[in-house]
Image (cartoon, rainbow, N blue to C red; front, side, top):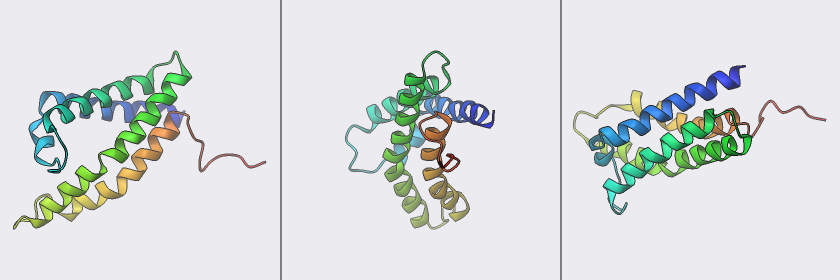
Length: 133
């Protein structure tokens, strides 16, 4: 039951983030590393990816689609990690410290948790609760 509830919570989080990427892209563009080509389309398509991943994660018709959504969201969390690091570095370089360590450190620690949570709630892995034979 907890897996199902967390799957819906994670999907809601990604759906909201995806919506924000589409409706208000400016904050996402400001943290985009300079080496990313075509930042506007990247922000747009990451929003679409988040929404599609969220829908795939909570749909009830196909376990295969749920697994694909979970793997996609986990890969997404890995791929956006450089933008999170870039945002951290930008903020820490500001005279006022930006959002500060109390924002960025939990965010850095949470990123691997989001990878695992997508895979676990999507049923791709049972780790670390897998029964040993």
